[in-house]
Amino acid sequence: MEDLGRDLTADGEQMDAKKIPGKRAHEISSVGIETGYEMDGRGVGVRVPLESRIFSSTQPPVRLWDPPSLLSNGALWRPLGRPRRRWVDNIKMDLREIGWDGMDWIDLSQDRDQWRAFVNTKEEDTRDTKKMKVFLLLASLVVGLRAQSCSYSSVCSDHTMCKYQGYGSKCGQPIHSGVTSNSDKQKIVDAHNNLRRKVAKGQETQGKPGPQPSAANMKKISWDNELATVAQRWADQCSFGHDACRNVGRFYVGQNVYQSSTKGSSPNGQQDWQSAVQAWYNEVKDFSKNSVSPFKYSSGAGHYSQVVWATSDKIGCGFTAYAGSDGWYNKMYVCNYGPGGNVIGGSSSMYTIGGACSKCSGNCDNGLCV
Image (cartoon, rainbow, N blue to C red; front, side, top):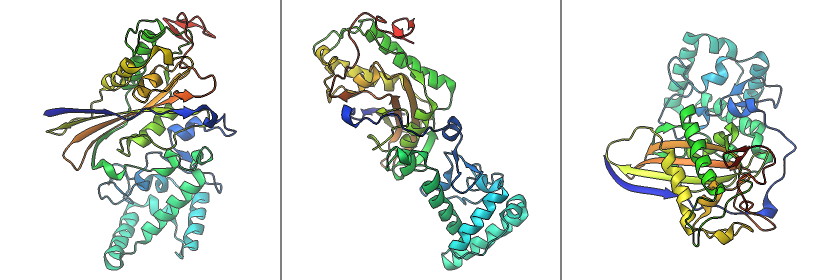
């Protein structure tokens, strides 16, 4: 494989302290985040997986209404395959609103032959009239789901989880998506904590000028599934840069983005998080030791300051590998941090200068507060 070494990091972000939202009144359940939205707008009892492809119009052409035995992702079948009577009644009500006569979706979804006959009929309708009643049903479901069950709409109107569904138009041919293995998650956490520990102990000699002062309150980072879910949704857009809003009910969320690209044969989906995290951290060479407290944002070192922001103790990341239309094979790495760093204004500090763990509110783990 020809590797032209096109590794990029999106410019680090800064956040005005006055604009950071406080704790929201609503709480997003772990079930809702990790396994799917719980649609309860009208007593609905069906769950639609967060990664359901019924929302994507940019996937390779597939019949979205196929059952899972005929299509690996059978997205529409998932919400229709295990319907409940109350849900069916509500769908019928929606169908009447768009002028469709109701039909028994329970029978249809449980009888594969009947389902296939129905699908074939609708495919003929599509060829002849370019109007597909199944698509009208799908559109009705999508509109209802977006309006009723995007829990993040109260955080901001253009939240990543509400604004995007499935792969983005820039993804070309997706190859692999998701940080799914515990091994990769641990690599991400360890890479961050090792570098945070290095700074906390005063072992970082680089800087403009350096060395970097030791940190008295540097927290140990741990994995957060909610942050990872939002990060993955943005990674799946294959857009190199930062999304407009990724905050969660608990806190403001910071973000680092990295992209590596190669030309040649198609790469596998192997993830190199060590390189991504190290690339962010390497900006320390451009960070002044005098910018720690009070914090002074540096446009060339925003990734570094987020990696070692003392109070950012939660992290969740997303990954997507895809073939671009320009002949490059790209790997997109996105990490979301909470509470987010790079906060400017007020008495904001990157960390408290002092001996490692000397300002911990709890215990100390080899230089990091736990």
